[in-house]
Length: 104
Image 1 (cartoon, rainbow, N blue to C red):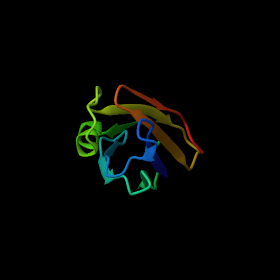
Image 2: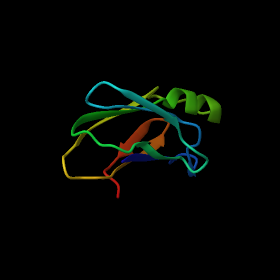
Image 3: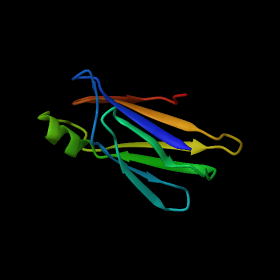
Image 4: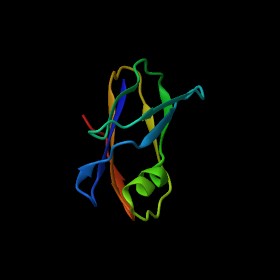
């Protein structure tokens, strides 16, 4: 399973209603929108080993929160390895910076 969580570090809140797209190694796109807690519980449940790309539409999020952002989108590219069953990929977001890590 692949999940994500977006936190707005500038406002100190979860980032709700952020459009998220996951592209799997076979080119299939899975889309979702973060919930009120800034989470997407499961973008996919069956994992395919290989390179995955998470795309966060931060421009639309910043527009709805009245913030002027520098990064209109954030792409996180990561490698899924065989034998691992859950990847949690959080995004810490601010108008002029972002950070990510492999969560638990």
